[in-house]
Amino acid sequence: MAEGLGASPSGKLPPEDLEARVLRYVGAPRDEVIIGPGVGEDAAVIDWPPGRFLVASSDPIVGASRGAGRLLVHVNANDVAAKGGDPAYLLVTLILPRSWTGSQVEGLMKEVDEACRELGVAVVGGHTEFSDRYRDPVLCGTLLGPAERVLSAQAIRPGDVVVVTKHVGIEGMTILAADRPDLLGPVLGEESLREVSPWSSSVSVVPEARILRPWCRFMHDPTEGGFMGGMDELCRLAGLGVRLDMGRIPLHPATRKAARALGFDPLRLISSGVLLAVIPPEHVERALGALGASGIPAAAVGTMDEGGPRDFGMREELWRLLALPAPGR
Image 1 (cartoon, rainbow, N blue to C red):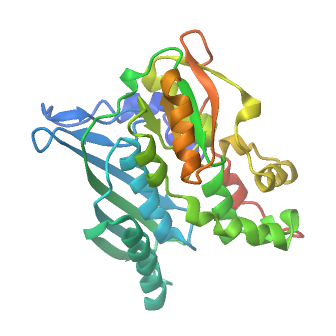
Image 2: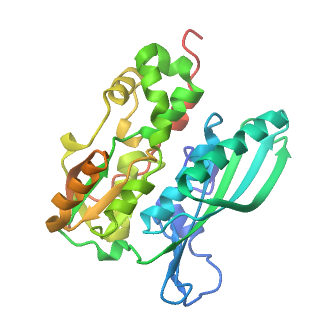
Image 3: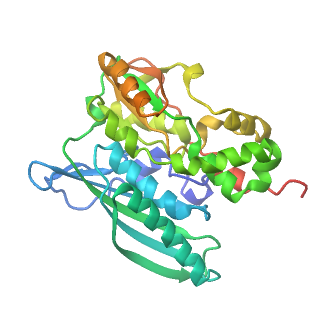
């Protein structure tokens, strides 16, 4: 890619640039680092204390304002849970527009507090500042949690089954409903818009990750780039392709309707709240049954295959949608 990386679309750095310009510079080697930075890795895993593991994740929230505090907690907790950890300790950094009031700051931290209490997570530190550079808040979280077992993509084998929980595009639709009701409302109608708004309560994948841990080889939290971006990262980590049954990928009717009307690919809409789990075929029925017993919908959507497609690209639809002009302008 040319030197002008700022001309790239909003979102994650392309994998080739991440590998060439970022991941080459990872500081001093340490023997206790079991899983370090890599394309598609949700979190780091450190062998500490001896006999157990510490899982560490860091993720921002950019471009959302309403509900951003809850999202910050959940996207970081999801990454820890996807690696087999139990989210426990959160550090929060808030970079806020100078136009923000004290009540807005307090409201944001109330959201963080409520989400943390739901998951049993303690806020243990962080940083706050105001800046003239930003119109919307920039939130960064770092979350730590213990784990008994490491889930590594290197354990994935051909024939393993890819299971998807809930339905794709949950986070993206939640953000659009909160920050762009002027865009989504005319498309869905008021009744459907009210149905989408509570999806923010489904953004956590911690419950299903805990259920699936005994049977999974690997789990992945597909955020930017949506379902297809998540599959691209998963295949890259595993060194395998995948045979997808596109008709089985769960898509809510409201998301499908919005995608048709606004012209976006719902499989590339940011999808926190969805968990990709890779499970040996002999355990799939039991895993799906356990999820169903807990009221968590899921579907088997593909099979890992050495000769299957593996390059799905990384493109996120949300940023373009947020930038669209209001209808009638």
